[in-house]
Image 1 (cartoon, rainbow, N blue to C red):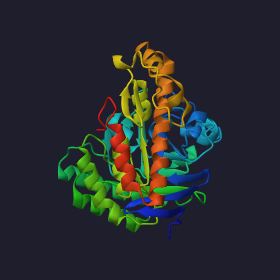
Image 2 (cartoon, helix red, strand yellow):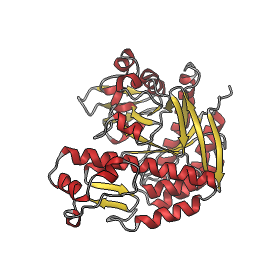
Image 3 (tube, rainbow, N blue to C red):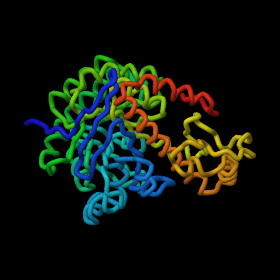
Image 4 (tube, rainbow, N blue to C red):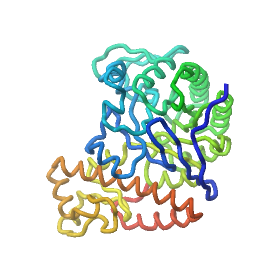
Length: 377
């Protein structure tokens, strides 16, 4: 059965791409960064501010939402968009990564993964079919296949086993998704760890199955950047040109620019809000650690040229004071500032690709980061 395409490629500059993905809840401009609302909320930032920063799409977490408040409850309350008031495009991950990273006493079989909830210890089974059912109940515009993600480093046999299981689960996920309403999408996930031929095998198998889009999973789990980029270089040329490509769990601004240069369209990461809660601000001038004493008497804003009001409207001295005093407002403002910077970066990348100047944009952006407190990597 052919899989409808909802993605339009508008421009290229080398391997970098810009386009639009049409979902039931709106259009996503690519390259796109998806802020992570793990349990139906952004830590430290209001939904209205997420929209105002320029975000087109956000991510929700299947594992957390199915445990609390429960997918059936969310569905009864009108779905995730109505429940959260976001009312825009949403992607939900499959829950597989969190099962591997958070769950206790997990057991993987051909049929499913069973685990003990990290909340109350209750035994839960997550199969490809149940993962798709949960994501449909949540009402996400883009669902992900259930996969098994292996932490690196791992030996070839273990990576191969998990990759082959993920392919079989991809087939089952697609069958379970076939009754979804028109316009909703399912992405396959390329696995294979840090082994090039396994990555290629996984990509080819998923293309044969056929999905609305393709994700690269199992990276940004502690491996060096050059390994991550090498795996993208193996996979991206194999993926259909007319389908969106999503690098899961990435990442730093530098990671995203390098991945865009290699043909990636979509990203998600908790880094903007997590780092904001720890006093770090992502800016045009690099990452600034507002705990540093050098900011205590600095009346300048983080970036007077930033279009985001919090970045240009508060002094470094005030933000330093809030962070050092453990005031909740400090974490809130820095989370806003960081999400806004990520969206500004994506907007700049889209414009540069359309103008054929992406390499110059990347070089100039990286040069600006050199003024920060923390290196890009």
